[in-house]
Picture 1: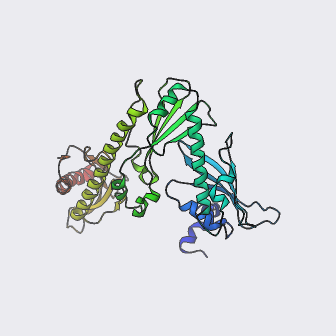
Picture 2 (picture 1 turned 120 degrees about the vertical axis):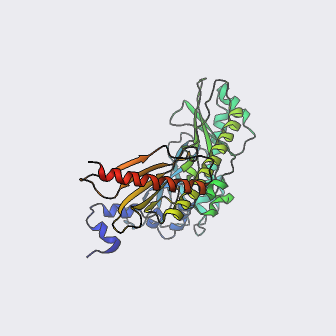
Picture 3 (picture 1 turned 60 degrees about the vertical axis):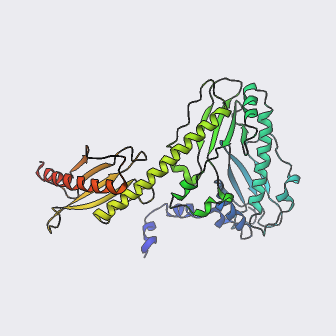
Length: 389
């Protein structure tokens, strides 16, 4: 008989699939190779995706895997590399298949991590992949800068002094070239605002700035496609910042300072909004008691049970739902009152509007004003909910 957590799986025909999905890829690898894969899974500078783990030894029907597909972020693309290790001979350096690449970009004899391969060092595979990625970046830079397109060469010349620019001449769409520029923005404040992120990820070894991807159509004067790419720990803010319009007179040299300033301003505003939302929610908890539900990560929703008439043993229960947008305090809170009981088979609900509010109030003032508004509106709503046919 199943009990506890296991019970929910027993009636589900896909329970084994769900269990497998939750397991890390490294758990299926040969014991000498598993630490190498674990380092790829835990690398935080950018998100390396692993899939299609499998064994290359079909004749022996090995129980453990020794090869995997790696999806590696680069510029605006995901590079798909097949990594082939040997479970029988882990001391042999891995082989690679660079999927979708037309021309070679590296001589294996020149890769230090392959020459000095040591499978007992758990960082060995990660080091090799990062070294190959750097060689790929150099090759792509040369391809883009040497491409016979006057506009593309002009843009490349204007950003020569910016470090860590990623160039990409698409092998799948040969009519496009992408330039990916890191925006030098201090995101430590934003990172600290996320309680779900380990503060150690702010270290330089695991820190990645937002990137501006500018994709040019070759041999064309059309405006490029512009996209902002935020780090995974800051992705919640990505929908807030909209890139400036690229006009006919725009070039990268002028566009980068403009978008950097905008991202800084929008992120600063977003962080301040989040902090004020948290203070407001805490203030309401102090005034109204323990909430029924609370988004304690982004502080955008909080719900309370309120009884009316108060201090009455036969009081009816009501629910207060307070919603706060990322535009708060510029946008006032959304207040909804609803019954927690049915009147003739229906639940009653009403959104409260037109209440006193100022975005210049402190969180304490907002909390007090909202409580006064809620007490007044609850008595009106309770009578309306009871009397409405």
